Length: 143
Image 1 (spheres, rainbow, N blue to C red):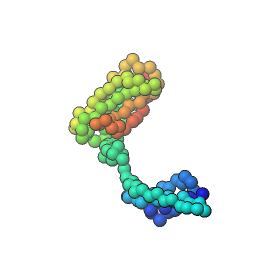
Image 2 (cartoon, helix red, strand yellow):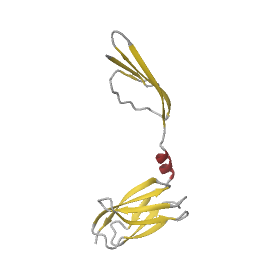
Image 3 (cartoon, rainbow, N blue to C red):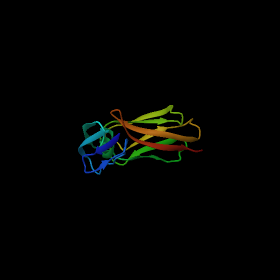
């Protein structure tokens, strides 16, 4: 059997499972033709490429940082710009167990989180809004 791919952007391939990177977002009409000495079959599908909803939300969200880092007992999670909507902060240990939580109300730029009692090591904090993860960072506990 012979394989032929037309990616709808001027690129083609003759592999059975090609990898193709499109140069830009947009809608493409991708076709695959498989043929042998007796016949050929073609399947085409419209493919739309763009940022996912999570990526769209994340690109508009400011970055976050934990200060001080390394921390001893209390860390302040800071946002570069005021939160546009309520955002939650979840701190997990290396096993994924939630060890602390907090909220950025709309308009705020910082949140203090008490980490007393946590052993030395690495923690991970995730900022979410409306169920979507916006940012994940690390906190080092060092005493």
